[in-house]
Image (cartoon, rainbow, N blue to C red; front, side, top):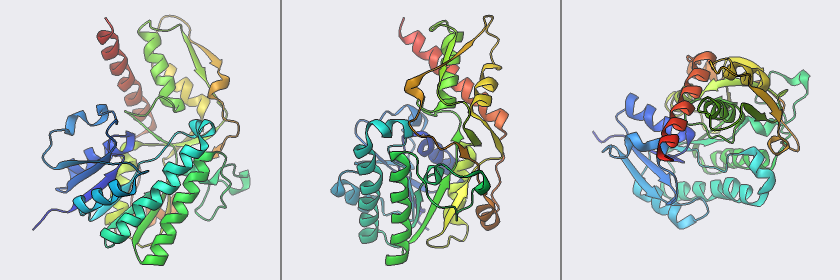
Amino acid sequence: MPRSRALVTGLTGFVGSHLADFLLAETDWEIHGLLRWRSPLDNIEGILRNERVHFHYGDLRDSSSLRNCVMAARPDYVFHLAAQSYPRTSFDAPVDTLETNVNGTARLLEALKDNARDARIHICSSSEVYGRVPKAMVPITEDCRFHPASPYAISKVGADLLGQHYAQAYGMNIQVTRMFTHTGPRRGDVFAESSFAKQLAMIEGRQIDPIIRHGNLESLRTIADVRDAVRAYYLLLTKDPVAGSVYNIGGAHTCKVGDILRDIVQRSDHVYRIFFEPDPARMRPLDADLQVPDCSKFKEHTGWEPTISYQQTIHDLVQYWRERVKVHSHLDR
C-alpha cells in the first residue's frame, strides 16, 4: 500500500521543521516540502538526507511554481505554514506581507483546487486576527470578532477567510487554525521571548553588555510549546476533519511578556546583574495585548491537550540559544 503524502509549505521554518520531525517520528508518510532557493537550511539539517523527505523549490508569489509543486507532491495532506510571519516587520513592509500571506494563500489554494482537490488541507491563520480584545471577551472563542492590530494580522484575516471560502465554494476539506503564542527551539529571534533568550546567551558568552532590550512587557500571552502545536496540526487533519472548521489552539500557561523575560533571566548564573532596557524599535505601533484563548472546541473534537510544560519550553529555548551562540562564537574565531 503506498504511503500517504504530506505537503508542508514553509518546511524550513520554525514550525515547519518541527512538523517534519514529528511526521518522520510518528508516521510512515512521505514528506514534501516547499522552500525557496534562498531559504536557510539550519532548521532541517537533521533530515536533509532522509529518503522520505522531498524538496520542491517555489515561492508563494509564483503561481507556476506552486502548481508544479502540488503536481509533483500529489499530497493527501497539506499543511500551509509558509508566511511573512513577523508582526513588527509588517508595519515596515505591509504590502509585502499582504502579497505573501493573502495572495500567496490564494495562489496555493487555486493550485490545490485544480490538482489536489481531495487533499485534507490546513490553513494556518493566527490568534493575531482577534487583535485588541475587550477584557469581557477573554478567554477568546472562535466567535470573537476580528479587530486586527497589524498588517500581519490583517493578512491573516485574509488567509483565514480564503480557507473558509474555498471549503464552502469548492467542497474542499480545509480546516483553519488560529494558533496562539507558541515557542521553543528554533524560534526566530525577532520574537520577544526568543530575543530574550538569545540576548541572555550572548551576555553569558560575554559578547554583549549585560543589558536585555525589550518591547512591551505588559502584553498578556498564553504560551504553548511548538512540539505540542505540531501534534495538534497532525490531529487536525487526521481526527475526523470537518470541512470549513475553524479552531483556536493554545497552551495552558498565561503570563505577561515581562514574566517570560524574568523567567528566562532567572535561568542564568551570570555573576553580574542584568539590566532591562526598553527599545523603541521593538515596540509595535499597536499591540494585541490580551491573547488568551478558549481552546475547548478543538480539544473536544480531537482530544488534544498540551503535554510540555512552560518551564520545559523556556529551558529548551534558552539551551537552544546557548548552543547557537557557542557555535557561532567558535566560527568567528
